[in-house]
Amino acid sequence: MTQPPPSPTVRWPDLAALELLVGIDDHGGLGAAARAAGVAQPNASRAVRRLEKQLGAVLVRRGRAGSALTPEGTVVAHWARQTLTDARRLLDAAAALRSDRQAELTVAASMTVAEHLIPRWLGRFRGLRDDVHIQLQVHNSRQVCDAVAAGRCHVGFVEAPAVPPGLHSTPVAQDRLVVVVTPAHPWARRRRPLTVAELAATPLVVREEGSGTRHTLDLALREFDRPAPLLELGSGAAVRTAALGGVGPAVLSTLAVADHVAAGELRAVDVEGLDLARTLRAVWRPPRKLAGPAGELVRMIVRGA
Image 1 (cartoon, rainbow, N blue to C red):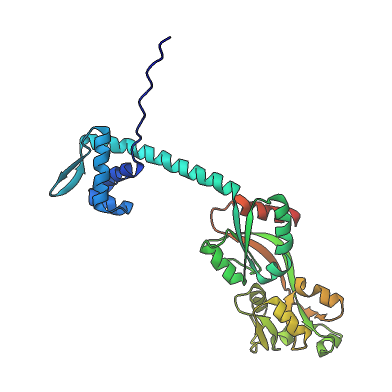
Image 2 (cartoon, rainbow, N blue to C red):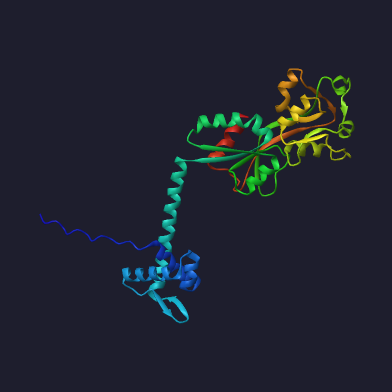
């Protein structure tokens, strides 16, 4: 039985040349198309000539005033647009497949969250998605929001009472600040609760401005004139160490001092009429629905809360 002759090998057009052809249609000339594509004009001109030779048609009319598409070139440019769109879809799909195999998740967390909650959360998440490479950044709450807004992380966790406009958020945990002193401090022997005015009038060991803990405290005492802080420190651990050392009264998350209060090393001081409860939040950039590993992490935390 006679076999049909083999089909000739198809020579596919160069996608970069098709992009230049579309660029001539969009920008009105080969020079502008080359600049838009980041190609030197002599190289662009050679690529278009090779495409014309391959297709057997004159696609570009060249003259002293510049270059323009011929009628044949206009038709080919129309087809080329669809070809380039499909090629971009192919590259996007390949990138998605690659990211599924080597997924990465960059998380930014405020100090309190990073010290007391993130290790447990990320440990649970690793049990569900051991294929995800996780990178953790630790900042104060304001810096976390800045990192999220700038796209330097996929999701952030903050203690601040509110998040900046343009970011989405959802509650993930509840926390409360508490005033603590050493057992030798006069406040530890008070029979009656401290008043808000007394607290506001006292120099305190506090976190730095920009931290969620500091913001919550400043917001609660905003109606009072207050002295300068006794000491301003960059982490909850540093504030706790200062409090344990008897430097002065401190305001910290219950997450940071619960064990020390239970052991009698610190005393929690009641403040009448002062509510220092706060909501810890996950924050992210639009769209509203957080997708990918970041979305999976937040949903896991919310379900387990």
